[in-house]
Length: 428
Image (cartoon, rainbow, N blue to C red; front, top):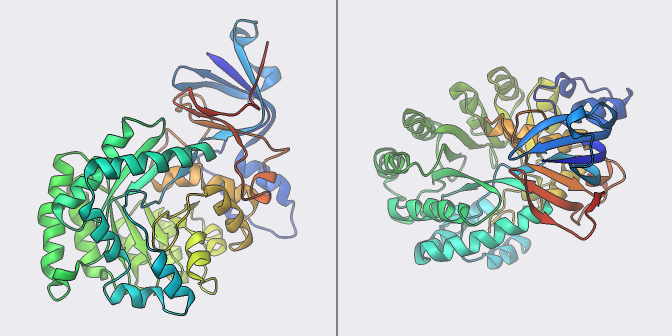
């Protein structure tokens, strides 16, 4: 057992009505304090893998007031960060496409010409499970150093049954080696493989009749995702895939309306998906439907920055005002967001999407947890898992403000210290 004493603790209440009550002329700082559940001069008591108590330092339980319990002093403590949308299990790189796009070729044109995702598919098919595992472990440790204690990882670069299973097995193997939770998501419907370009229905059959049953039988993923957009899968194809995943116990998530308004967000609402991700072209009616169906909007500003599509930003303010929970994620992948910097996503959420610092920090904790339909992570409260990050910052608003570097001085996963710097101080 030990205590974290922080100048500020961000508890992140599970349900927050303040998110839809935005008034530019109001007291935004007090509103942000409520959104993050800020407690000044706070104590977090950790016992084993679990948070035992959270509150003001002066109110801490008598049982931990003696000198037998270690006290870690930090500036800001908050739930461990959750990167809830990544494609971190991949091989190779696509810097040549980076050159083509910056010379004027559109991302969707590269995809429809048989490049893009399919080039990474070629590299993954050539890689072994061990190679994918070793590369993934290095990437996980890089995310961990920033404060990430839960990392969602999608398949989707195999597009054959054996290669999709290989990717998910690499995720399971890496989990045994890293102090960070890896959340596997099946994305066999990421793109239509070249050999099925003129036989799309046969590939959808393969996903539904072979891939999903085998993934479920081996318990390799609890989530099923699909890329529903121009150049990928239609609404009808996506509905069939997600419904098949649901029949096999897999929670639906969906890549929605990134390139066009494909009615994918509306499909997410219809199916009660956990999240609709991207949303750059989603309309107002679909946003209202998402809010009604409690679908989380997962937004990834790195894609806009990396692809140069800042003229089509996801409607973060509309989502929040409608009552949707919003999550920010990196979308780490070799084609459209080659970054693991979730901290910079906080800044971009504020500057591009005009989220407040409190909204942004909530989006990588409680919001991201809801995108995964999890209530054991993403908040600081008694009984939840002791995943925490201690940050060196004068206050929480400073974290997205001073971007481009990690403020993490200690990262705690299941109560154990997974990463720490020389700045960590223990009181005697």
